[in-house]
Image (cartoon, rainbow, N blue to C red; front, side):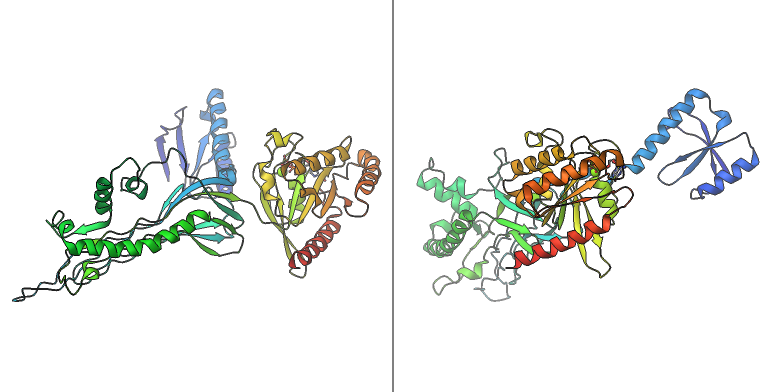
Length: 494
Ligand SMILES: Nc1nc2c(ncn2[C@@H]2O[C@H](COP(=O)(O)OP(=O)(O)OP(=O)(O)O)[C@@H](O)[C@H]2O)c(=O)[nH]1
Ligand SMILES: [Mg+2]
C-alpha cells in the first residue's frame, strides 16, 4: 500500500511515500527499495513511530541539506541525554491540609420540640510525607508547592468528616531536608492567620472579632446572637484551654527546625502535619445549654519551607580533572554507561554505577563532572557537585598519567577538595593513574608520581597504573576498593 501526502511540517515540502506499515523494520525497507531500483537510494527519517522513505531522485541538493539537518535534529531529539533534568538542590513549600470544619446541626424528629445537637466533627487535614526512594536519582520531579488534602467538613446526623488525603512524595535516597526561613515574596494566605490576629496595631476589640471569625461556625442567622450569650463565652474559654496546649507544641516545633537525612531506603517522614478538624456542636453541649448553635472551624495545616539537597550515597567517589577518564573508568568497573568523549566536561550530572563481585558483593561508585583549578570560585562547572562524593567512604582520584606532570593534577584535586570541605582529603583514598597504555609518557611519569605520593603519604595512599579504555589492571583496583570499603565499614560501626 502506498500513501501519498504533502508533508506540511517539513520546510522543503516534498512528496513522501510511506513504505508499507509504520512499524516495518528498517532493514526490510532498505533491501526492498534498493532491489527495485538501484538508482533510487532511500534516505531514512527515523521519527518517533514512523519510518518515511524519500526517493533520492526527487530531492535536489538544497533540500538534501535541509533533510540532513532534520534527520540530525530528529536523532538529536532521540539521543538527547535523558538525565538533562538533573536537579540536586531545590526549595519547596510543604503545607499540611487544613482540618474540616465542625458542623452545627440538630436531628429533626416529628413531634419533638427540643432536639439534640448532631453536628459531626471535621476530618483532620492530610499530611505531607517524604519517602526515601532508591528508584529516584534527581529532585526534578518534585513540585515546588506541595499541599496535602483538606479534611472534609462534619455533617448532620453525627457524620464526622473524613480525613484529607496524605501526599506522599518520593524523594531520592541521600537527600538532606532542612527547614529554612520562608521566602520574602511568599503569597499571603487569604485566611486570617495568627499573625494577623496578634497584630500589635489592632485594638483588643478588633482582635477578638477577627479571632471569632477565624474560629467559629455559627448556626444560620446566629452569627450575631451567639457572641452575646454566656454559653458562648464559656465555650470560648473551653477552646482557649485546648489551644493553650497546642500553642506549647507549636512553640516547641518552631524552635526545632526540621532536619532530616533520608538515607534509609523506604524510610517515611511526615514533614508537614495536617490541621485538626473542627468540633461539631455536640462538643459544646452542657447541662445548662442543651442546644449549642456553634461549632469550630478546622485548624490550618503546618506550613514549612524546606531546602532539599541531594547528596548521592555511593561507596566510592571518582574525582578528577576533565578528560582524565573517570567515565571510562566507571564503565570499565561497573554496569553504568555514562557518556565518554574526548573533550572536557562531557559528564554534566553525577552517575552511579554498581560494581559486582563474583561472591555477589556489590559496591557503588559515583562519577561526577570534572573539577578544575579554581572550581571553588565557580570556574568550570564549579564544585557544587562535590556534594555527591562527600558521603563516599573512599575517594578515588583519577589522574591522566600520560599528561605532562600528572602529580600537579593530583595536587589541584586535593586543594579543591580541601577548599570545598576541610578535612575531606583525610578520607581513605586511592589513585588511579589512568591512560597507562600511552606508554611513552606513562613509563616516565609513573615512578616520579609514585615517589611523590609515598613522600607525602607513606603507605597510606596506593597508586595503581590502569588503562580504563582497554580494561587493564582493573581487577587490582576493584579488589583494593572492596578492601577499603569493607575496612571503612568496620571503622564506622564502632
Ligand atoms: N588511551 C586511553 N584513552 C583513554 C583512557 N581512558 C579514557 N580515555 C579517553 O579519554 C577521553 C575522555 O574520557 P572520559 O571518560 O570521557 O573522561 P572524563 O574524565 O569522564 O571527562 P569529563 O566527563 O569531561 O570530566 C575519551 O576519549 C576516552 O576514550 C585510557 O585508559 N587510555
Ligand atoms: Mg565523564
